[in-house]
Length: 344
Image 1 (cartoon, rainbow, N blue to C red):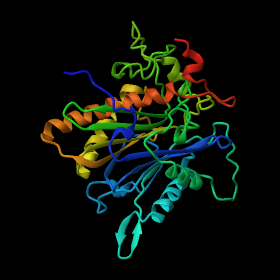
Image 2 (tube, rainbow, N blue to C red):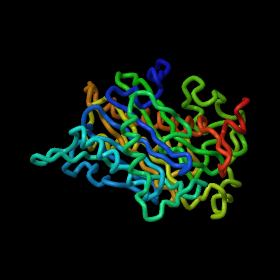
Image 3 (cartoon, helix red, strand yellow):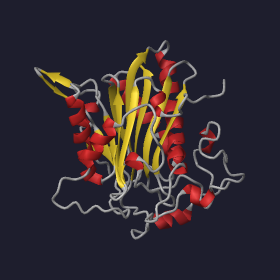
Image 4 (cartoon, rainbow, N blue to C red):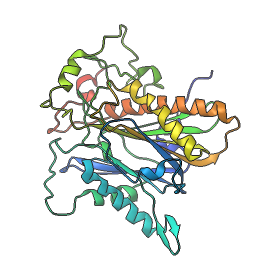
């Protein structure tokens, strides 16, 4: 098989018709990310973590009436961060987007959040409106093909068990034609690297040197028992009772909602490839899948299998890139990958 290639940007926006915008507040130490398709897109979701925080995800199930969405929102802020959806929704409504009901249009904007309330940022907004509505609006306004990774958007205040988390993205050109892209905000309870080593768990999927090019360790270490002990300590810096990795997979292949649901389920393998442990009772791990519907499959059985596999590998790479690209702040509870291993 020919060597896999990324899209031109190695971002989810390599999928034609996808734009992404970030916004964050350094004092808040949190932010939001909005994915805006050029046209309404088929979407579904799979939630495999035990502690999700979401808005309007029930309508993404295949049996539900609404067929397409206008945007997806990822945000920090725990349940408060769901206000980011309202900000993005308001901008889309002003632009005339949304599900038509008579003379009214209602933008369909599902969203998901991660917990970053204990990361050192100022969350004392009291009885005032939370800042997340403005962050969602600003992120939607910023949407475009190019966007930054690492300590950005929804990943601005994210952590993992041993390293700072962040926002990651990657893309893969499919061997049969078309493209799949991944976007993720990594705030995982688990780790993205092998215990005590700089090597990423997703290394076998790396294309080029997109997260350091270190490959797998010469001798694979056993599961990190020390990390498990740390995770069981509720006083640990990474706050193991408050985590989540939330992601979006996009493709230009035409999918039904049921097919998007199946790809969302398959893409969760990317979490298992890049994070250990994953899908815990304390993570809200979920994956949205959206189709811009620009390319028909010629062999749906074969191409669905390929799409599921490459959605998972692309997501694993995006998770590693999120941690690899994170930048430090003096109030961080955990170090960045580059501050520990950047000279390698």
